[in-house]
Image 1 (spheres, rainbow, N blue to C red):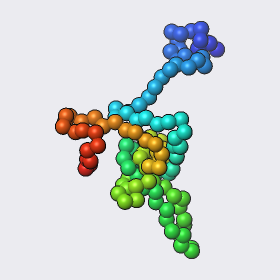
Image 2 (cartoon, rainbow, N blue to C red):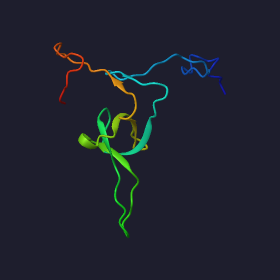
Image 3 (spheres, rainbow, N blue to C red):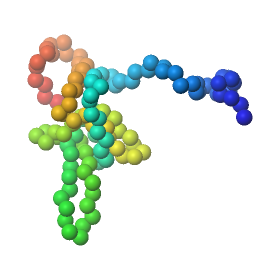
Image 4 (cartoon, rainbow, N blue to C red):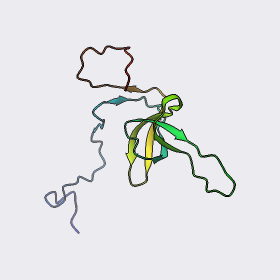
Length: 120
């Protein structure tokens, strides 16, 4: 078997365990502290980069009971912001609104100032 570290022309993937100093972020940009608690919940629909609400189905005798899940929406019952989804496991990664979360808004309008209330 060829060694991926020795035959770089054959295997382009580097297999060493050094830190590559890679940083990933979406175009809007997010900042969180190291104490931020990210939660994974089953999802319904596709809530990526949207506000989500936590849905808990009431228990009814004789009916199947599903675990709590998140779906796009919110409004008065906004639970958090979905920052990532896994299509294979149907799981959403959510930053709850109780956490310290800062997002950056990219807009073409230069008249928006810090502290302005925006309606989306």
